[in-house]
Image 1 (cartoon, rainbow, N blue to C red):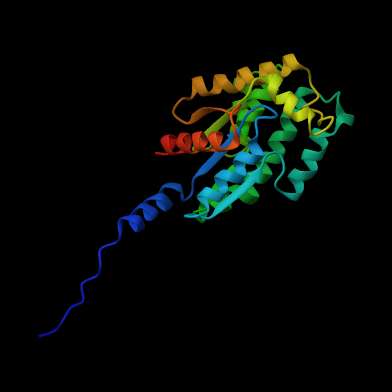
Image 2 (image 1 turned 45 degrees about the horizontal axis):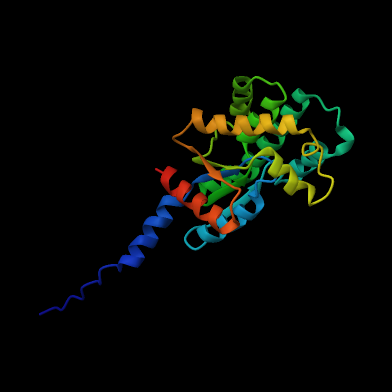
Length: 227
């Protein structure tokens, strides 16, 4: 009689890990919000947590490529205080187009989870606050990124006063950070409006709390939105 070895059923922990990996393979996540919201800290915490189960590629927008980093330097240089909003819009989109083509799409195609520090949601908020029609921004963005929109966007929300206070501790601030309080209040309003307009894939997290508490809220928001 031939003996057959029976394969052991997967342990529950293995099954959960496999489900977790499958959930995040090829996903595109964005953390965004007003200046001083703590995006860099939360990006680092989220990527470490995801990296236990899936390849993670963290990017920043604008920038993230040789071309994009040069555009970023122009955009944030305080010497360009008179830059027209339309010029800002096109430069952000140019940097984003390169980032998506060179980094984001290839990473998603091989099954990595991409986590971006800012994306189109920032342009809607900042250039929208500068007076550009939000629907026009979305149309230009769709062309620039070839229709690649995030699976989930988490807005880290802080009042403009708190965000600018945090920024001031780092120094004088870049060209965008140096814009007035009323501008940054409009930016915050436009971030929050995106969550109201797209509740299925945009979440808001209170970023006035400690980094650990904010991270858990970000994690819960991402899990809830990933379908």
